[in-house]
Length: 426
Ligand SMILES: [Zn+2]
Image (cartoon, rainbow, N blue to C red; front, side):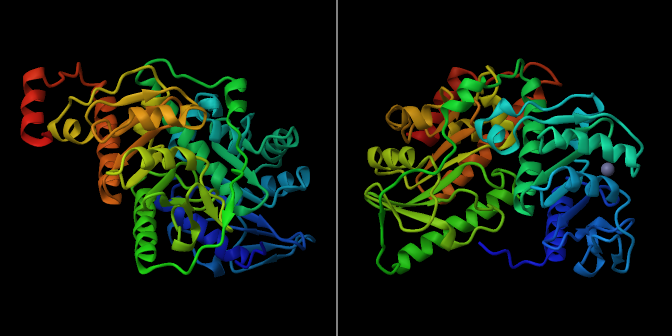
């Protein structure tokens, strides 16, 4: 597809998003895009990152001439050297998000084998030794690691630099890596972290689904309404940090063997109704690239007529449990037990290898599952119900993780649970 967004607008939009989600500070971080003519568009030096506009972005021509009302970022040297080392890269993100900084100041690299998707998106992360910010030496250190083929590079006592074939790809890698770092930190509070082997990563095919296609009739108002509703909750899930920009799937039932599902590589922050895929009788409408969890969603809808929405998501705290052997005990507060009941657990690639088993074992009475190293699966009687449950799950998981630094959790006893079941769940 032709990219019609001006590089300066792209950089402003991305910086606003990075700042909004506290993935950089007012003074830290810089972004660039290499244009077709070799110009590098880059964020300016010493301008408030919380209030950039397109006119603040600086263009550095291939001959070194600078256009714009500011000086380019003081880190321009490493951007330039990375582009020289890697002609395939067109965009660079550099920032100091806290979880990655935590790794950086320990001289450590987050292992992206935490999730198959993260491994696929980010690859193996490199590490560049410290040098003075803005120096050519720092640029040489970083560009040297990029030259070895890494697209994600941790900087010793500094932060992270990430490159992509276009800006969306660089941003996707950046957000995924920060999410991996956060999840590892949370999972370590629960005990040993489970990483996937290379063989396990390879077992999940990251390609598009091969599905039969059909040309749908014009959409009914019911379909339009459901598309609007599902998109609203997907965007809200992103803003609430329950969904990441590209991982997971969210679907809603339209009819007996008919549902709408999120599509691959669609940004959850801005998803629009046309970016959902209609699945009917196991076939997909012509055009979109549906989530790879399609078959699982279909089997659950077939098995459970009362289920009208399904979400597979990777919010940090619930996902930390999925990467740990620790059991998520939901007998914490009444709300948690009423919404979540007892959490079911499935092996890592069950969603793709044994979807029928999951569809059989998850029921309206067991609406929540943790998938090893793949986050949570949540069923609901409506989109709102599934969303609400996902929110309660993430809050419960976070409370349990936070409680670890306070003391022993006292779970509610059997009598309390029986009383809750009698009052709310009969
Ligand atoms: Zn920096």
